[in-house]
Amino acid sequence: MGVIVPLKELYKQPCRLGCLGQVVDELIALRDDGTLGKGEDALENFVASPADLDPHAPFELTPIQTAYLLGRGDQLEMGNVSAHSYVEYRLPSSFVSSQGAHSVASLVGIVVDRLVQRHDALRLVFDIATQTQKVLPIDQVEAYSVRNFDLTEVEDQEVIVASMRQTRDEMEALVMDASAWPLFDIAVTVKTQQEVILHVSLDMLIMDFASSTILAQEFVEMANAIINGSNSLPTSLNGAPMSTFKHHIIAERRFRATQRFAEMEQYWKSRKKLSFHESTLSDSNRPPQHSS
Image (tube, rainbow, N blue to C red; front, side, top):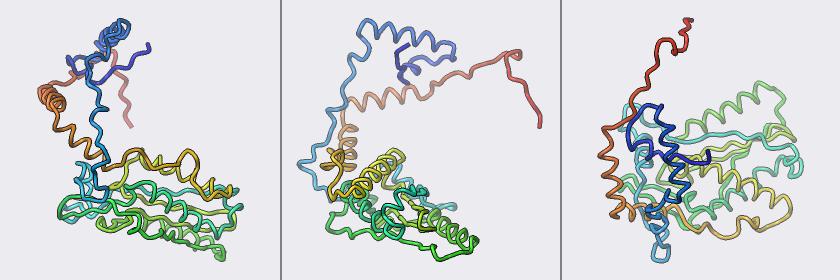
């Protein structure tokens, strides 16, 4: 029907799913007469200016970062576990052949260094005592050394499988020191001259799923540029990002101090006791129950 139903519209009056059609009809009418969206304050006004910010001064944590730090400590019974992502990539054989299997780790290291320079969040370290984080200056970050496991001389498949399992088990269970750089771990396993596995462990303190997707895309672009003989960044990646993670945190803090935020907070507090009523199905409409 060409209309997006905002969540807030569904919460204006709790109802069974049957009233959703009425909500959509009302929104279509508002869209057609041009009133939909009017009166909404634009959030783009709440953007922190980078001009007066020290990019390397400590700044506050987000709520999810605070939770992650708590979970990786030993204060909780089921603690000592970090929130992180571990992924393995089998690099394309054409890519491995063009570089040479034993040169892949060096190339990966070059790309990682460029990503670290480009993205400040990859240089984050944390102070648990003060519950703050800061971005290290580029000149305080060493070139990243990618671990390289060479199995090309190993013929016993059981040994190869065991080596892969050991690397996987170690990187899956990592709890990195949040106060020290880096908060990621990258390794390469060279199984044959044509088969190379890239191991990537990323601590979720410094990124989320969307961020890891961006990094993966930029990694491919940078690697392709190097393969094609270019020592510069791809055109699409020229220039630093317009804003940083720290800018986002400061902008959010400023927004929380506004009247608009206070009104939004009060609105949701007033609605917290309201929820959708559970939809009811007659016995004739219920799906059949199957016993195992």
